[in-house]
Image (cartoon, rainbow, N blue to C red; front, side, top):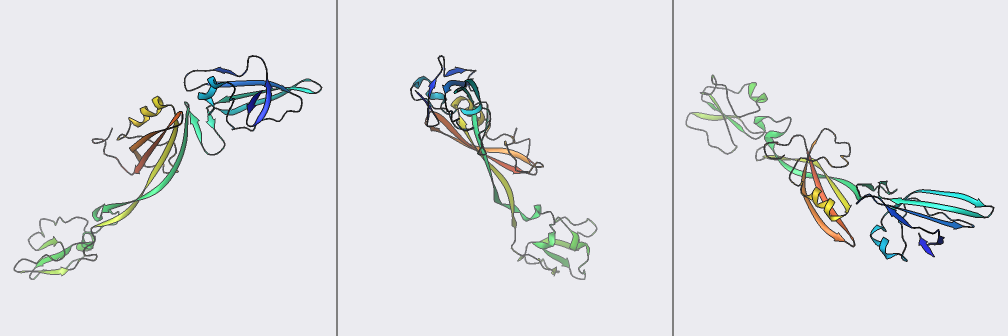
Length: 254
């Protein structure tokens, strides 16, 4: 007897049969049954009578057929492989299961990098005696002052004592605030498969790589920031994080 998905069948001679290349194997099973109960799609192959097939017990049912050979006898054929989706959100490619999740990571970003940043947020404006505040100060985005005004105006951090003959004409709107929180997506990918395949992915840490799923953040660039590889039974599990960003310095990262 052969057991597949907790159902007992009498296999046809020559089955189960294994073929395919490394990482892309397929197992085909055929048997005869009078009142067949077909295994469900996406269930794993299992046949404890043949331990030689044990490394392939993770193969998933993709195709099945049921053909009558007489009035009360049917030939059932099932094909198991490792391609496509397993029906639970997992995908497989090249012999590797993959599942992706996404979280937003809070990152401290220098205040000057805010899209609406103004210098007056975290700087006082010092002016020489006789000079007054002006509207140009409201729109300034850097601490640089035009050459024609530099003798009368200068930006300074809150708490800085003005030089002799100078005074504070505009106080910082957000004194002490030097950063803000930006929320960047981090995609977490868990891959399960053969060690040799997963170590090739792990070797890409620190390089520009796009995760299998960007969760709609298609405009971002992605950096593979770290991986861990552990053994899970006969297979290996690789956990990898990808951090999204508006830009990545290609001088620093390939």
